[in-house]
Length: 402
Image (cartoon, rainbow, N blue to C red; front, side, top):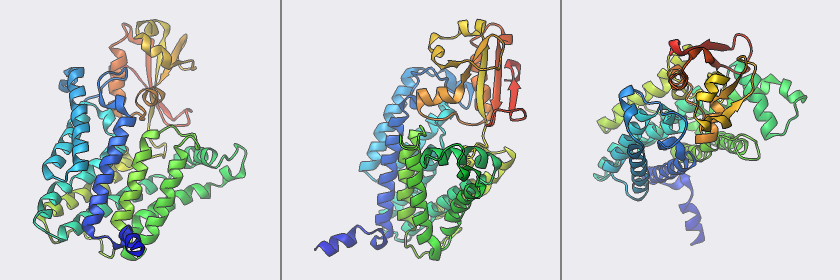
């Protein structure tokens, strides 16, 4: 009996359908935990401005956002309990609506979950008809999603920004390496991290290399979890459940699977077209981010510092016109005469537990928010920058530019 039970819980012995059920339920649970960690992100009662995709969506009151948040929580819980196509459609629809109302919600983990949910719209329909091939189609879809995620995340790390900023931070936080350690001078280790992540993605393509890709990915995610825990000193706690979800995704979609990667498989037409569109969005479109023509988070450009941050510098007259709640985010910086600075990234983390969505349109929207608060635009200066904050790495803009 004990032998039977031990085999039962080995992913390698599970059917494709059993793997998908574990994946779907686990991702729903991790998404739910992520929502609770970032709760202020999902409602209207906060100081940080809402940034809708269109101005017409900015007039909705707090009650609408609370209603949609409640609906999101209820629908996500319903998807954990019941496996129905209509519930998946409802979940995806409410996610789209909430992101349209505030671009800050388009965090990379939300984007990954959204893409992961899509094939289950059709899978839960054809599953009722005992279509066995559809289970393999969805597993193939998930592997294609993971290939793009890991490969592009690794490719983006082949940059001086990652090597000079993120790599030392990870070494000091996770392994308690001191500032004067020779390890920080070994740039090869930084490039090695990028190579490993790229190879994890490429290894998922071939059945013969998937086992090693899964093992290395698990180790990588466990190290990331340690880094973003109190042990490592990183405070981006919202991605903790996401990293757990990624471990579950890669184990149950790829570990000891023998099916080849199919870009256009036989089977259900809707699943085939979903896979084709997925390839466009996770394999091809991220290349545009190299020229800043596609959003960083939609390109899996993560922890590279090849993204822009934002400061808002205010003279004292402008500070006096702000809501008093802003005072807790002011700091002295040598950016503007007789004034102070708000670090938008710190503000976002402290209030919503997420980073600012790194896009020029979002930075301009934040600029417009502050411009609407001050009577004299000369008392306000907006700055976007890439770390480190040195000449050539920052750009000044003003209210008229927004």
